[in-house]
Image 1 (cartoon, rainbow, N blue to C red):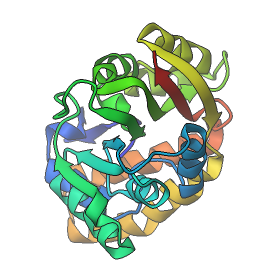
Image 2 (tube, one colour):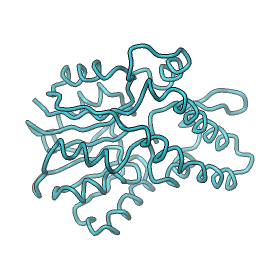
Image 3 (spheres, one colour):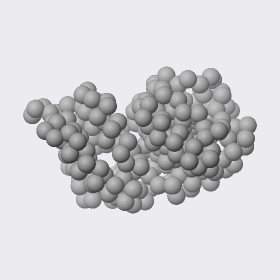
Length: 266
């Protein structure tokens, strides 16, 4: 569930879907592999930049969703993984993936809120968050999560960002309403530096992280979801919203995307 426009029309009024039915949102997004744009390849590329995490290291995956990247972290690192998400069903699916892969003994699923992380100061070696830091804002997340990292600890997050300085008015307005903190890669890196990190690397996720991995699987999921909730205005609004996002990306993908930001605590 990524940081795009969460506003929907219900009874003719635009409202945030989060105001209505968390269970409905959870049901919808748990029916697809990914809750936001991404890929196993992109996760592994970012992991390779961070480098090895030994068996004594502790990694937190914040806003883990259904655990696609959590599984990659557990497969690629020997570290202990703490996977946190607000939705219990997402944690259940994350742990199911890890059990099936034989790595659940090193993964702890935590139902929790990234506004109040359940971690002691300087207790983490790596903070990971794909498409989820928007929930509290990029700069705020960078600043508040900083204290949980050990000195020299790593942070790796993916975040919606402008890929050009000039954008068509339609997509500029859409994103400024959906996520006012969207900004250029340069400005995001400056925010990292300001909040106490040395920027190590950035890279833009390929378009198929959106089209093939996020939007395409939703087509069948949307059909089934609407069949289960006939006449439900919130369900219909959620589906309409996701379809609108996909259509916008097809037209304006040159102007924005998800970017991985990787840094180290100074």
